[in-house]
Image (tube, rainbow, N blue to C red):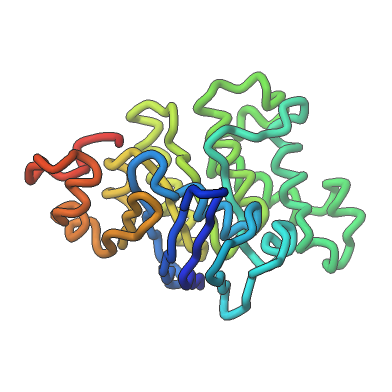
Length: 258
């Protein structure tokens, strides 16, 4: 699904990401973790086309993405969420999903104008399904700005899913959530994966990462220092040192956020 080869990004003299190699297989949930400043969000921005790479390549489904702007990558099937919530605050919950649903993929679809105005049965069914996924069916007519923080997080998750991605990049989706909300988010991530969406999860909450991912890549100072199953990563000495320092114990990074 996604292959990064030697992916590098420098900001002046700062090497935010340095020669990252990573393969994401179709249908999986892959974690990307590391301490603050390790290059996780930089990797997401390079995959989405927000940043241009200093070196290296991004291939998506065998197609070279280098040089393609974000909207073309969305059209290819790459969608994302953001660390800081970026909804349309003066639109309703329903309208936020409707706008995202009318992504560039819809330009070539038949009956474009009816879909654009939200009058087709299929468009409304898709939005209803997304509202159910986000547990927001009762808030469809509410302005996004009036939602509680956790509800806004759920709406952003659903809005990314509305673009019908093949690959969804989740950039710290659990930030600011309660324990129950994080547990619910894990279930939503699994449901989306089961519907055919591949997930790349960037997250500090280790309970979520260890609970939903099948493989994890660990970054530190822009370098990949480990890759493997959650159990393998948790017991890796280099990972323990990156999170906890040189006196790390066998508890590893899974005890909480980092």
